[in-house]
Image 1 (cartoon, one colour):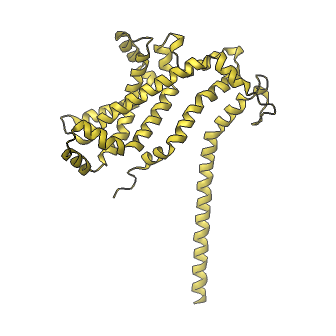
Image 2: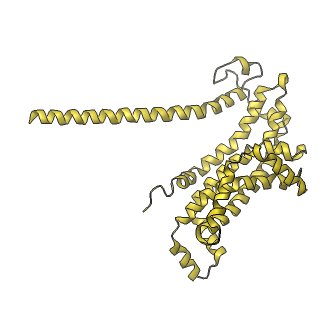
Image 3: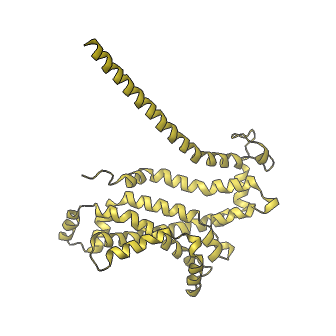
Length: 290
């Protein structure tokens, strides 16, 4: 009996050690991944507080003499005010365009029956695999024929098209998991298709919409290739274009470039912080099905 108890105690201790070691390994991997993601941001902010000379020689993360004036110089010398406003206009326009079109398309693919439904759906998803550089020629020719070169609309429309498939991919499964009984109840109350979409599906799909909005906003906010391709007027350029102000080969102003990059990154970080709750809910929705 004593031997059996010792054996059971040994097994419990072994199991506890395995759990502890497994937890340590898991947290170690997560900490490593978090460090690799956060360190570039910390280094960028640290470099933004240094002088041009010290940014290349001082390897410390906390500068002895922080140069907060770099942010003011980056904003004024780089004309970041105009670029920032342009990026806000483009981001808001593309996000609302994607949410509107993708949610309507997702509702149609999730609830309606029509010929070629699955084929058309997978054709849309296939466009996710086409990178922007691989389609720049076709995009430029199309925008040129439409007479939208060097216009805000000509810059917004291709990005709505490029982010549409991702929005459709996220929203369609979410709509399919919404009970059909809710739509039947709304239909009894007199709602048509658009009424059901607006009053039933959209409120319930806020977590998924938040995920689509953030992914789209990050893509548009960081976009650079289309801006160089379609926009020629400096007054229409987005914020990423402003970073080139401080890059000129041997005359690069690294400290101001880092300050400008920090200004560029901060809005997306703030958006993620405020949308984090909805993003997590949207990413985990449907993980457990009843």
